[in-house]
Image (cartoon, rainbow, N blue to C red; front, side, top):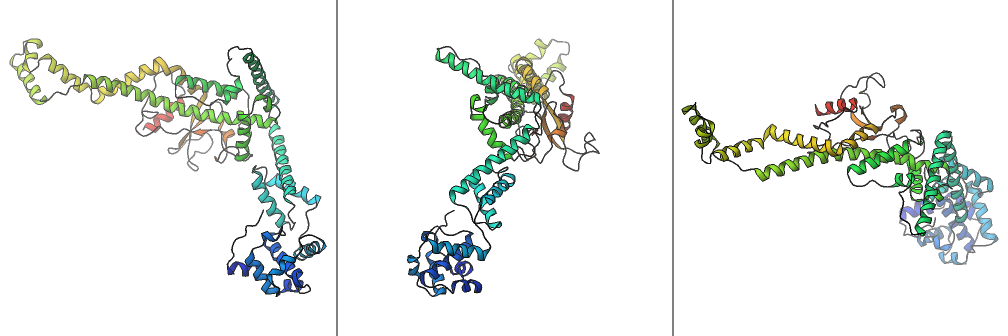
Length: 487
């Protein structure tokens, strides 16, 4: 860290650059430039926990302020030697006075171990770990090492922390899960090599590997996207990863590993520790679950919106408002009462201007409003679902499980107890137990549960609320929860 030379006000000079009584005793035995140089080194070390690297790090105001106290011209500092036996003796004298020591090999090893256990396991940015290293040196009264040595300590701490985390996570994986992960990456590597050879020979491209499909981002809202995401989720679940695999790993660490695994080829991915490869699959399971929930909401909304749009267009094209409805009603009633034995075509139709056409327009206008309109929309929606979206939505409901998650203190007497009041509705991958999805809900690792909260459809959207999908009831608990929300 290089100290920026900024102008100092009087309060800062008095607070940090005033020689105390016992410090004046150390300076009293020295003369000239040596006296001023020693005093400046002493005050700089007390403030920053290290010695300045040269005259360029010393503020001019501070030098003038200290020079007046030791009664030596500030210009004398230019003759002070920054290398040699004199400054080394001054440094040793100041360290002994302040209780500091130089960083030995044993100290460096202890600092590395402390950083790996308390800092690098949560923070992977080298510059932030370096800040913690300097703070720890000051706490332990150790003079900070040189810049190059600091970099080596930080790198060793980051490496040791990753080795500890990977060993801890590997111990939680079963033998079967480990074999599946290795086979998944190896299969992707072989397919990439085969695809590269065929590409060189001018042959067509093959389908991406399973790992390649898992890495792919979802497409637009469509039935094909829904089925593809369902296949991805089933492929990830087939690995059999524990839901609490990264429960005690910091979110920043998990996010960093996931980013590394996502961009590297299978060949490079095989050289990394197993937990780093697992991170991609573990996080993709959560992300794909999120995508499926959003697809469910968006698809149901799209079905309703398209049904309304289709019915509205049909009605607008055929709509013609009929005026004078009260007069028409009176004329129809009068004609019917006058000739009760006559036929409709002979008595009712001629009673109003326009005859049969006017009465057809009147009936059509009524059908464009009220329950008839809603029934028409529902019929169109049902047809769209039955003919196109049914197979995708049924599969989606098979892989997602909806459960009520009431606020704390609003639960029943146990995990399966009655729920008092309306809580938030959460989505978990089907087959996952709530007990394996506990945490503080903050994010990756760090205890966040693997479920995602289903976001409600936008205001005015024909989404989950007020919409019944025809077909088999799946699952019954979903219908019960959604029914409670409609009420």
